[in-house]
Image 1 (cartoon, rainbow, N blue to C red):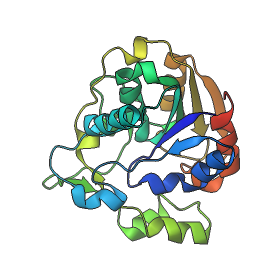
Image 2: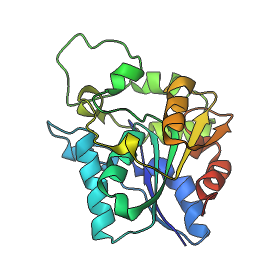
Image 3: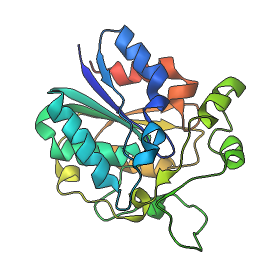
Image 4: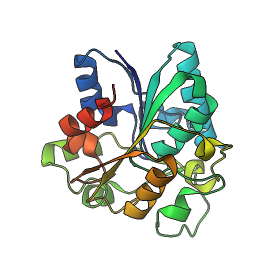
Length: 231
């Protein structure tokens, strides 16, 4: 059986992976879906200075203290950046990486270089996110009513430093990885061009799902099968 570590993206927490995690566990795998500092049930831990490196440190510590080897790291949305940084740091513990409609930035890039959002005209807050109405009509617009209500009750502002502070990577993109990249055709961000860039650089296996940015909520069976495909 395999160790899976599922990394969430912006405005999310480990909760976003609930449906996939339960399916992986039912198949006999060990699954961790950690919530990053300042997010979801850890929103009270928000403090200045949180960036992608903060999250990388947390996941690297998880792999070490839980003594996880031959691990499959799975990241969605901005969690892709965390997967890249953790894989580089903990190469000896990582067997495979899976990027699910994910941001996977090069060294020095920022999320806002890829994802176009309205400019912030005031002071930069420690965390930011859409209003509940904007989330309902934007982020979660394609979810069924029950799932949308469930997600709206759980989404939280995301630490701003993860998108404002450039990503720090060394030789990740020059290393050989067993990688799978999944593009969600109906998602406007991060967009096909960005996802294909990642797949090309990683020489990754390519898959597509005809859904929006949250396949773990809309197509959990299909996504779970793709995540398990090489195991």
